[in-house]
Amino acid sequence: MSDRRRDGPEAAVVCLPDVPERHQVGELPANVEVVLLPRQPGPLPDLSRVELLVPADGARQIVLAELGAMARLRVIQTLSAGVDWLRGRVPAGVMVCNARGVYDGPMAEWVVGAILAMQRRLITARDAQLATDWRPFESDELAGLRAVILGFGSIGSAVAARLRPFGVDIVGVARARREGVLGLEDLDEALPAADILIDLLPLSVETAGLLNARRIGLLRPGALLVNAGRGATVDTPALVDAVRSGRLRAALDVTDPEPLPPNHPLWLLPGVLISPHVAGDSRQSLARAYALAGDQIRCFAAGERLENQVPPHLLA
Image (tube, rainbow, N blue to C red; front, side, top):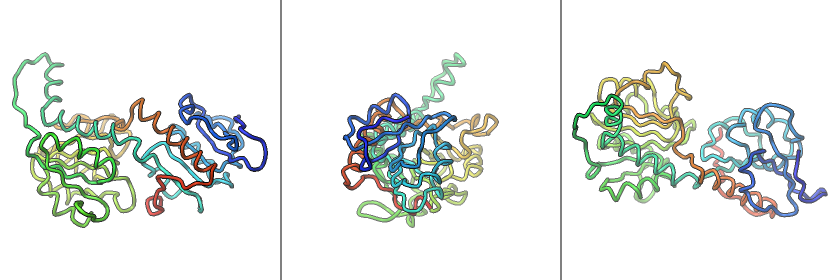
């Protein structure tokens, strides 16, 4: 099934998910032919001529199974900021571009909301409401706290901008040092002073298990770990031990494993807030993701440079 913009060998063939949201890509030039990829298992269109692929998040397994047969593929434009699902699977010579910037706002809102819910004990209040228990309690303010933001890119900057008005001191940690931002080699020195550790790291060989038992042990008693990056950047058994002992609290949008099994201890531990990997999701962010894909398709058809190119080391 395809929408042909122009017949002839000069057409740029792109593949989009067959979903209503694809219309957010906007008007495409005449030299673009669109092949529609169903999100559900079943008969597939001819993908052998596809040069630029926009995979839907819900069709990742379909895409991975077909990559080897896409002989003309040159670009994969994801609708997500994270690309760890493509690690080790991208054919040689294929560029991957992500949706960096699309999810900065909603991700930052989730992080700040989770911190407020934990610090102001809104979770405690909700539990008390369900138990019809009117019992006053004290909570802690954000003002004067120090937040270490691990993964200080565009999302980290958006989080920092929203936390500073609360009087929170921000320490940014990125993969490499730059002016005003620490590098990963400084992480061990930064952790003991953190009241809140915000993990926004992508998953790579470098970041897998980075927050291991030793580093979790460097956090001060009562610290809050907020993970909206990737679950596998944290040693889950070590986190469970730290929360169970009362040393740490945790707000988690991502876990390892994921989805979190129903019998996993994290579900019922006090001092834990869990959401099902939805921090960046909103009606507006999905529209922005498809609009970005449309811009990328138009650049590709015009032979222009594509934005958000993912460094190859993150795909190894």
